[in-house]
Image 1 (cartoon, rainbow, N blue to C red):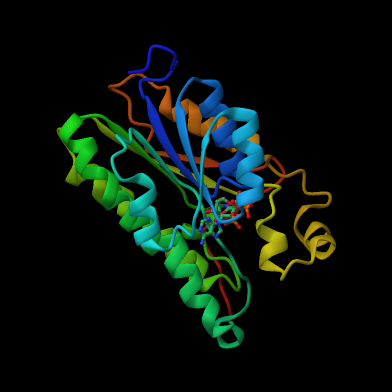
Image 2: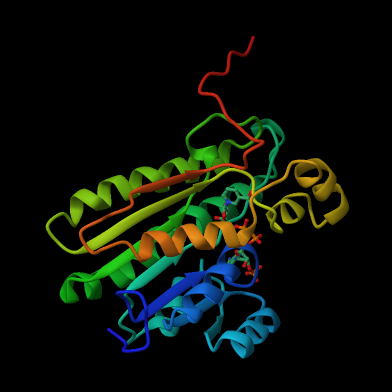
Length: 248
Ligand SMILES: NC(=O)c1ccc[n+]([C@@H]2O[C@H](COP(=O)([O-])OP(=O)(O)OC[C@H]3O[C@@H](n4cnc5c(N)ncnc54)[C@H](OP(=O)(O)O)[C@@H]3O)[C@@H](O)[C@H]2O)c1
């Protein structure tokens, strides 16, 4: 453990670090004295984040497993925050075909492979913490979100299985399951139309902020070693979801 880290971990990897929840998480981890490896595609944003926080920037596509391997090879990763994600909203019969693979590759496939990549080292050192930012959409039906919801439900189940797979070790697994958070995810889902995204998803909704989610991640990471915060389900106060949709 680093003498300067206030967490029981030395080295962290955060995906989706160039904006939103990932960006805020890098800031808080770096402030806690952790060596942070920040992954996203936009090099300019990572450079600025690195300048401010001292994080190590890796401007790569996390769905490119070879790039991830090259970036992380030789690191003793204690914390992996699988946060990068993409969304798109359309009923499946109208869904852009190429977006289905994009969502699965980023939200699910990359998460499994990156975890598989760092896990042997965590097992060998008997120390580690894997966080996945899922979504309430993986737990409750949300119109027009079939591919996104399917990936988020899958990572939730993945975490439940991983707690069993590594039972007896000191590796912890945390699902962060947010409702609406004010980030760029909506703008990207609406093809870059910031104004429309703002009006449709955020205005008057009093959403969570990225820093709120970063605080929840830090809470889970800083719990005593015998405590695994399995799942944090966090909504804006003005948002709620029910468990039953009757269509037809
Ligand atoms: N905002 C919400 O209301 C909400 C609610 C529930 C769950 N979530 C989940 O929260 C997570 C974080 O999203 P956010 O809300 O913070 O959105 P965001 O601001 O759009 O951040 C997404 C991040 O993912 C990165 N990314 C996208 N594709 C990538 C790729 N192929 N390789 C590497 N990085 C990639 C983006 O950076 P680059 O473009 O630079 O690569 C960006 O840093 C996602 O998993 C999302 O599903 C969000």
